[in-house]
Image (cartoon, rainbow, N blue to C red; front, side, top):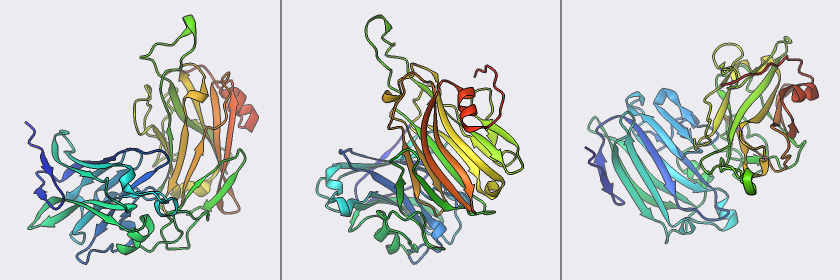
Length: 392
């Protein structure tokens, strides 16, 4: 039986388990984008290293038991893994470029933090905050902290002047480029808070390769799975959705070629060849997190190029309805956003982006090229694979 504790600002409660799911949700307003982040703090209330700053470009501190799913606004915490040098974990929300746009949390009206048991899903604590009077664009929503050998949760709800950059600097993070900066990479050793949107087909951005360093490049595809409706007898069932699959073709400098996709159960492997892995197959489109390809950056220098694409496995090829977007994230690099903003509703497959190793840097180019199928795309990019009918 659940005995959820509903908190108000300033209240705290003990945690019966150290393995948690923590969801941070908020109201919506047109044109207002919100980022969730966490700071792993020492006894002085500061981060001991920039790795203790968890946000969209640096979503995991696995050895400390902290994982952020930015698209879901959800943290997974395993506090039994958190070293004793970390005394507190502060959770925050910030409005992207809020200062520059004159946006603040009063536009969103409310924020809620829900703490659940990781294994059972039982709700442990909830903190709901009315933000109608909050004129700040940053908000410290809650804290997990040690108290007499036990972890507790405190509801905070404290506004902070400025956005993500001044908040990060307040906690001791060595920040490089600002949120609105178009620069592709932060100076060495500094955290990069910028986001880059590739607006035009053929537009490219080059990032540092981080050759040989352990880590991942995360390529997430999210889309609107609402049914495609057409007139008369051909109207699709309201229960149906679009099964949009994320996939890639890869080519190594050695000449080896292949692909990773759910079709045919070619999910790849992150730790073994080909060092690319697809995390799931969201057949219904109901997963808020969509689908994600992971690339092992330790072996990135071995790749020549990687073609990121998506195809409609089931459903009508009406791309204008799916509102698909991919986000490319890696440590100490700006997040890259590519939207499907042009459409061909008579084709089932779309090449999204090309990742290439060029002169020691990783270049990402927006494509948005549509094809009737895999073979046609393969020929267009000169890959050289053979294709047979597959299923999943």
